[in-house]
Image (tube, rainbow, N blue to C red; front, side, top):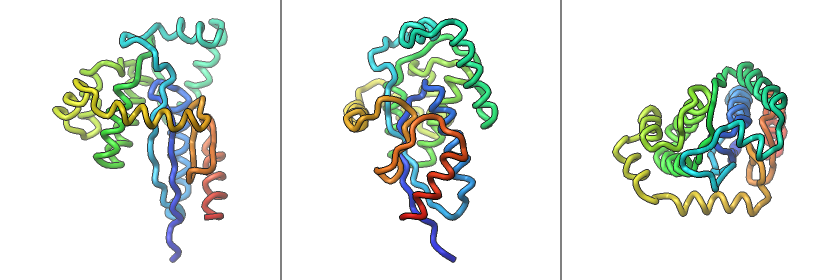
Amino acid sequence: MSAATPIKIDFVSDVVCPWCAVGLASLQQAIDRLGDDVAVDLHFQPFELNPQMAAEGEDIDEHITRKYGSTPQQLAQNREAIRARGAALGFTFGTRQRIYNTFDAHRLLHWAALESHEKEMALKQALLRAYFTDGEDVSSHATLTRIAAQAGLDTGRAEQILASDEYADDVRAQERYYTERGIRAVPSVIINDRHLISGGQPVEVFEQALRQIAAKV
């Protein structure tokens, strides 16, 4: 029996990016389709859509209209397209009123990755659900602490990190690393430090790319 081909994936994303939620669900299903043929080492890397956003966040429709010039009709169409893509992948998009600063969420994700891959994945998924499905404030320290506990992380340690600047420099360094290499939009899926797939692609696109890359390793 042949050994599984190792593949490293860096998933550069933000927890308030809807296409990142779609892209992750799609990528995970593609990985599942590969079965035992490929051994995937998946890492989440930080990217802030709005690094200057105030702690209290902004009304999401006002924010998107100002940032992208979207009309109310375009907002509705985009929201429905994202909802449908999510539903097809088993991810539920609920109603969201505001968009939030995500720097502290990224600090917790950095810590979770140091704890274990399983806890990093659990926290990432819990954060996406909290924001997109439940419409929660993912900048609130109380909310982040509760989500960390749901992911199997220590509540006291989460509170300690959030009350300090711990891991702030690490997160900023990771953010700079990817922006300096041309990452301007997310999700950006980087395979084996060489191959870039941008956007919330269909499962088939990720699966085909992973199979092609694995065949050449």
